[in-house]
Image (cartoon, rainbow, N blue to C red; front, side):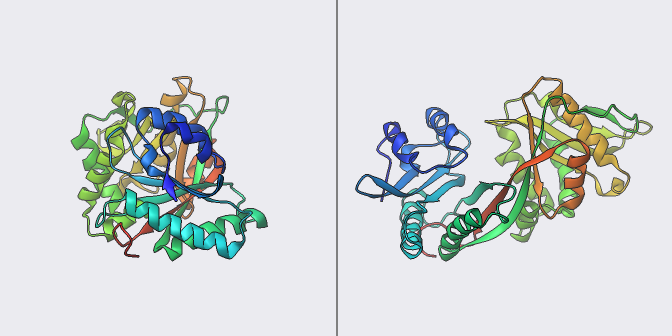
Length: 316
């Protein structure tokens, strides 16, 4: 079990397959990955398993564990032991001892539970992670708007203007987080963060890294008074254009404003002639999932996230 010696071993890492394989070359070139974070379990020249971490930008700490694959041809018991050794050995080398282990995320076919072979293969992976001390946090719908899909015209119920600055956005996010249905937001609050601190954390970890125009970020207001109703963050991350965040303030929920706000964010990105718009919402957040469906977004994948409550290292 060892890390890659350099980008020249990328073909070795790709001997097992996952939907993000096509991003690896550019991630290495931009510093979002480094070979020392990309580990393989080998028997001779056969790859039995692989694991890798990701970060936002060159020089950053590992932020997400997003590759973990085991050769399904290896007998189940042996595969589980190899997987556990790989997780613990690589984590001890990559994640500084005493620091939080990065969250694991995996993209899944939308019907992964209905296909026995897929369910069993993924269940074996998740079982290894649970033996390594992880627990499931949330399953999410991954959604996509495609060109040619109709975008509703503005109804005139709300007016929109760009978000002024970081402080205004954080101030709007804070009350939205107080009653959030989002599992990540709930986990932040459960960890002891206040809603304001959780909003600041979300901004620092995600929004601050977007290089797309901040003018796309919109505040929805009542036309008569200018009172804020909600907001939407259309953006481009490292890979796709996305509805990164959307929220309705608690005092204005229950009036259908989410449809108008989502339509505005979609119009902004559709007006840029983007090839697609990505979004995600928790499987349990049924109202938000229905809003995306009404706006013409389709579920093309699911995602599942696992977290470690214990710090990094080999103590789990």
